[in-house]
Length: 226
Image 1 (cartoon, rainbow, N blue to C red):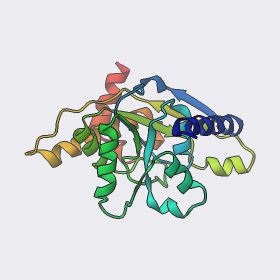
Image 2: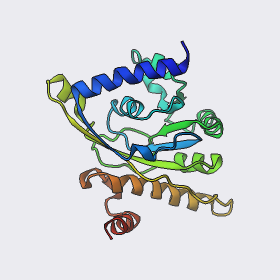
Image 3: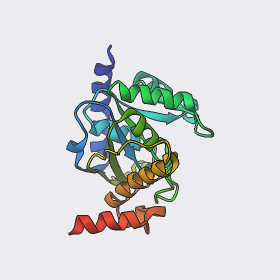
Image 4: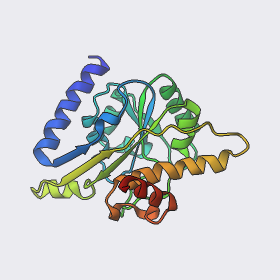
């Protein structure tokens, strides 16, 4: 069975389960390009986030960077390997994983990444790491900000026979100017802040975390309300 057939079957299974067990509101999924290299930059609240995005996006080349700590869990290694996911060791710089991710984007793939680098335990956004900005610059691909709310605690609600309400909002693609060698660190940080502030602008206020008072977020919110 080819990857495309497996994708379709898994997507159908996830869609059935999410519709049965949760209430999902989706806004702006049409903003994800139908083809070509692209990064989905999303906040990360729950283990439900990856299958949720996989269910919503109808591209067979969607894959993700996945922390290698999940190799010890049942089912997840099979799923990640089947869908050509990229394992990454998050305790230190994993240049091999970054090279694989860069190659995948340059070949026109769609890659999901959590720019915070880990799952938020408080539901608020954590400080972003420069990996997404670096990959977007090197591969010259757009970044689509994705804001997820409601998946934190959702597994417990499902197990107690409650249907949690989940909201997923896709923002407009961001295309950054090339990063100059002379201002590399400064520009990567600026691009990282832009990505996280765009995500924050799509989230309810209580999810904005360390970016709640960021000047760039205030500019984005002011522009969207004018």
